[in-house]
Image (cartoon, rainbow, N blue to C red):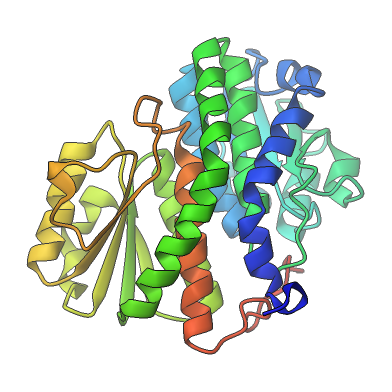
Length: 352
């Protein structure tokens, strides 16, 4: 297949290591943004907002912020800010709202930011891939320079924006160790993207399932939701995402021999999460583990993808889990004869 005939979505998934590196370099030019916003201790709470994939990556950003800074943060759907703000945000706190939008044109994010304009205890900022966007013009934003995508589904934009915000949080924390962890991620990502491409292509070609469950905790919980969305957007198949231990209650009733359970495994909670994965295997599910390292405790799984970075925090390692789940959506769509560049009913951003 000539390069011109390769789907745009594939090219953009494959280009995420370059996009992450460019985001890192761009952040070095915006240290004032960090000091003025998420590094500013005048804020009692930082609220990351987005819609769809941007909301899911906001969950990862908020979890990282809480862990690395010890300060309060949350993630909220952007619509909740302009529709039900009084039941979403606490009164009496100085709040920073961080708008997260690949295009910078998401109507719900724009409406959310406009709705708090002039509110004395709320300030705003953002992160986007487009410097000519409405959001970039209305509030000060971090910019992922290679996050721009032609595809409808988010891939390199999500990876690079998540990584860039985590690097900003690392700077805000004052802990050089977290910045060093993210440099490790930069070193690992290029080869991991290539390896994930090959591994997932072969896996999808050789295996079938009628439903897929993604599991994860903490920062990886947001990415489990994103992984679920990627597969759903590109294949229209039945897929869900849960917090790992929550799944072993009522939801596990859906597991059968046609189920794929994909666990984004945290090192800090490894023992407990692997118990859940083993239980799902006993119920007949196929089990795919994405983990920092293989071991005797992962031998039961049908496929183990090792991303590396076992010595760094789960939060820093987050974007290393994304290539495999993005390629899973892509190759599953191709296997079904679907065009991942033209997902049904979807556009790059939603208008209201």
